[in-house]
Image 1 (cartoon, helix red, strand yellow):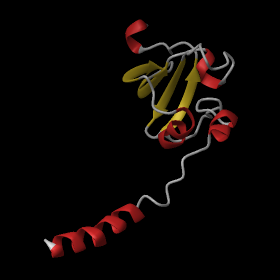
Image 2: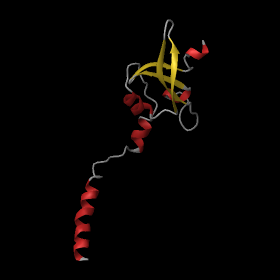
Image 3: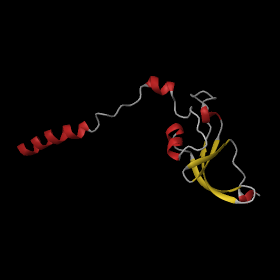
Image 4: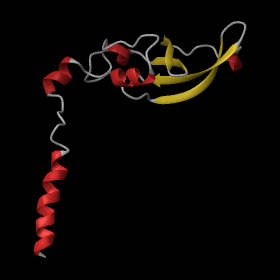
Amino acid sequence: MKTFIISILIIFPVLLAGCADIQLPTPQEIIKHPIGTESVKVGMTKDQVRELWGGPDRITFVEIDEGTEARSREMWYYKSFVGMIPVDAGYLSKPKYLYFDGDNLTNVTETPLKTVSEK
């Protein structure tokens, strides 16, 4: 029993030490830079978009009509939100459709692009 208590006393602080470096943002930082208020730009990676706007509300794969050919794209859809957040805050004011070719953002629109099936 004594060795059990000693091992717990040794292991417990080691486990807690792993959490010591986590620093959550303060409420002031969250208010100053709320998620979704910074703009995404064509060429950004999926990770960069997630960092700015969070995860999308829906992910689908679509065939986009690009004139002479159709290209398969990953489409991320973000719903618009109105409520506690100002209406003109980044993507939150209107729904957004983001299109990725591989890992890179190629289009940002407020209405979905024409797909091959709609032609």
